[in-house]
Length: 475
Image (cartoon, rainbow, N blue to C red; front, side):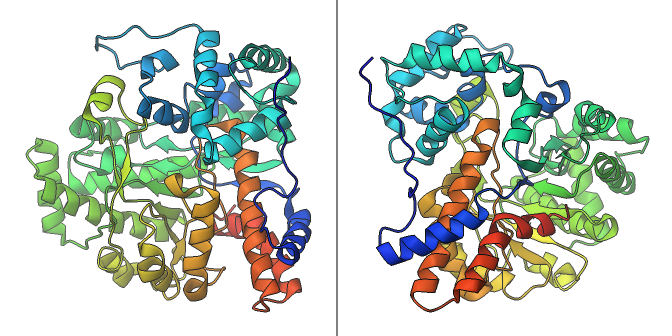
């Protein structure tokens, strides 16, 4: 088969200028083999608990990856044709169940990913994990499918073996507040409890606009033995679930609220809003106020139990109502919005931002806030750190802009290294490799411009690749 070669250039993503590139190469060589700290992500803990072979290439690399089906959907490919199943009870187009057909359809549209981080990640996986030496095209689709299927049947390609091969030291999954964490309990029993840890994600019981909020509160009470329909019992129940997650290895919480708004309400006001939330009669403005208050409550609880608090606002979720109604949450129709941090975070930071025992990591999808808001805030408040370029900006140019716009004000040490925030397990080392290359390129530029000494750059390269994430998440 006369197909174009799949080659990963050793200098990819490094600066083009020769002197700078030489420094970047040396820096990268010192960090490329460091262990991976993956403190925030969405891989399935069942993979590691059960250690079963992955089913097939489509189910592993296409069906669960919203980066993939988002792009294809934008070009008119139906989600059903990619094997994405609708929620129960909806009618419509038949879902493709043949994984080879799904793979061929993906291969025929692979050029759509030119210039995107998805292309970088996928090509890395194909070359480095599966040893493929030709590019993915319609003509090589079956070659890819057969080679990957053959590999996935081998013990060396089971989840735990790949975990070790990738050099992952620790990975955090993310579970809702009502999850029984049975997979994490098995991981503990198998001696993997410190390698694969959970993260407490309580949106379903903090957000009055989350589907089934009142029923979720009832389940929260049943799980904890508290009267969660009273505000005092609700707070006790949340603290109990945090303790359970911490016992299962959690070192952090995760809050995906629509905005960064925080509020420090009186007890009476909080009780009144909670009652309205349970009744289903709460307004959108009141729901926002309650979410903001609960972020302050989460910060208070973090001071008690030591869990690191992550806030990543600014996504208008489920923007496409047709996709949401048919396929449910997390199907690629979330859109970034403008986000205020200075005024929004002030109530929380005024109350807890000077506490040395609190750590709040803030992410953003609004790049316009980097230099204007986030860097100055993180450059002042001891409790606040900046999360890396995230989601839509988890890309070479996104990473470059993040460093360019935050470093002069916040420095490097008010950031927390890199986290991959992915459901796509095999892309994790590819994503970390991109981050390490981009950070080394940025440091190299500072060295060549005589703004940073070379010995300092080597220390920083190590810290950005490994130490900062480990320390920030108390791993």
